[in-house]
Image (cartoon, rainbow, N blue to C red; front, side, top):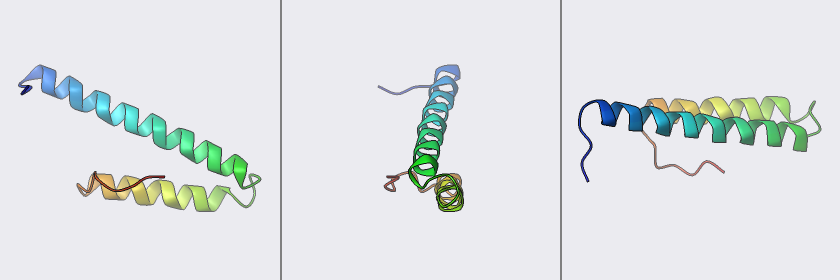
Length: 64
């Protein structure tokens, strides 16, 4: 099924929202898992690395 017009825009926006929610949950989880102090920076760096890959168009990479 091909989406066109406004439905395509809504679908793409929904996909981005779901991805960001999933990435935020992973960030919170790994920050807590790292005992907050030692987990904050690695979780934040990986969050920005994944976002950068998504922005550059590489959407098929493994996140977890």
